[in-house]
Length: 233
Length: 114
Image (cartoon, rainbow over all chains, first blue to last red; front, side, top):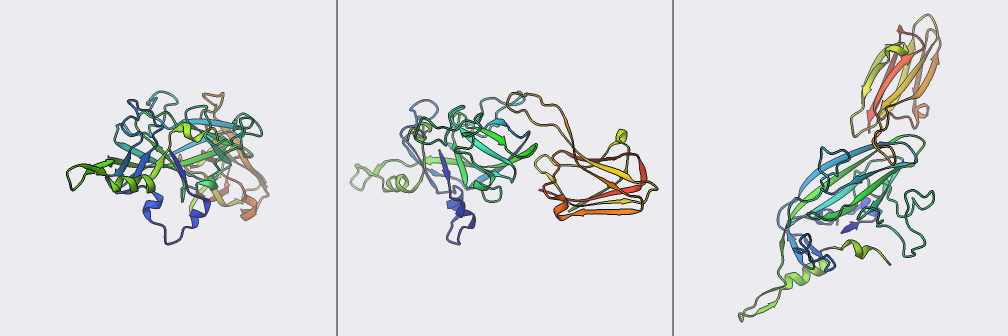
């Protein structure tokens, strides 16, 4: 569900390929079997896919002016459409068979971000249940926080993956500076239609055999976890 | 880099020098206050913006924050740059006013958007 390259990736060598940065045509993604077999993720749970088109990347900048010591919540899902006040940002695919890779590029500023999925469930905690991120706590609001340096606007390293009708990614943008600040985050939405890679294919003798491409895709493709797999350890 | 220039106006006639684009902030690289008037003037630079909704406040009120004030004697040109302006930025609109209007006192701001 989320990948992030290390900070040193800002200084990537010439060995870096485009597919290391964004899903490209032919890239593989595979979904954990932990995704529920329901009408939202049944089509992708436990399956492997190949991106079937060249990337179409849509820039989607947002800015929030917030006083220091306060935070604004933004919801990336499609749950509440505009023009409703505080609408969700509609960053998810509108149909199945499509994966959106959402890169998060943060402009410089005195702020940090906490990520939840779903709302009120923090992603970046530690194993102990005695300590967890808490945006309203003076100490633990910093636990697991992402700063502009972690994924700068000029070379984002933090990616989220979304499918149609998935639960909402929610971000709390917290300003932690001397005064008001304007937090600007440029989301780059890499819209990827995907085609399933069958686990078995017809063999030379007419029977079905294991598909070597599937095996390779599972080993080497981008693995998209379900939200519950990022907790509890 | 952009340049904005305006004569000193009274607080009741506050002048907008630059409106900052939605996803940028304005960083002044130099500010010159050329006071060729007959009396000293105090110049104020103000940042006007409306915050977005935040925890517990659904519709925050507009903010008018004075980000700098300088008093310049008659016949003097004050130049601020480098460390003088460190940390100074404008989020919404850069506005100026003075203790009294004077067409002979001119404020010039060189700036960049970030």
